[in-house]
Image (cartoon, rainbow, N blue to C red; front, top):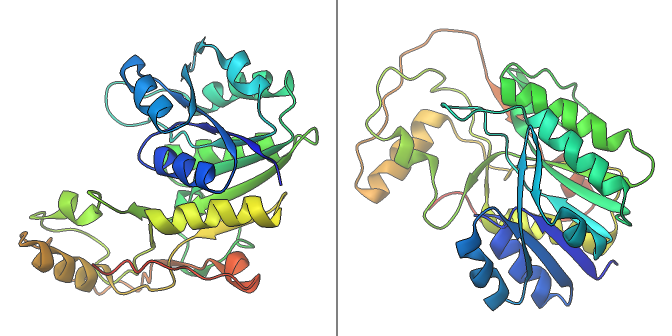
Length: 269
């Protein structure tokens, strides 16, 4: 098991992940895009670097960051909405070039179930990717870029919707009306299980694989979000009555479960 681990992107998932890796005995190197956060990372025992990836190149000491590590966790979500949208594939190409100059031998690439697009019914790691959103399409391209390179071993984790402390999709959906897909299943995962999956992959050495990170409980969206809104005292989102045959996709974390592992943290508040 590699002891020198890099976490590229110490944000909502990356920072608690880095702290858990330190607890597990790893030496952890982490990046942030903000000078203000360098001290926060250092105080947690993380060797911190300011690194900013963009479609035009990489700013910061990426060489210094990568030179220390054998295993790299890439936790950088695509920014494809709003005015500051960018080309995620170009960003990852610059990163890929830098990785090849260093001794990184293993990569965990954090992706999303968006790569399955509008698939119908049960979806597992063996299902074909059919992305429909721009972020899904770019993630598929980046997954391929890293998996096709035989100079290191890449494992992909496709997480469902992320929930955790101070983060739940119901807060954004609250009060919205005429939403589609109320009868479709939810595909969510708690922050604690994201960390549990990543640390398990490191510990067990599951390299060159694909994992879906989704908690195995899939109530209908309109039922689940109604109940979660009530628990928080929020107006529930309202869904259209739909007679459509569209069942939505139900994402299975088949690979992780078949290896004898479990998800620990319920997505029900």
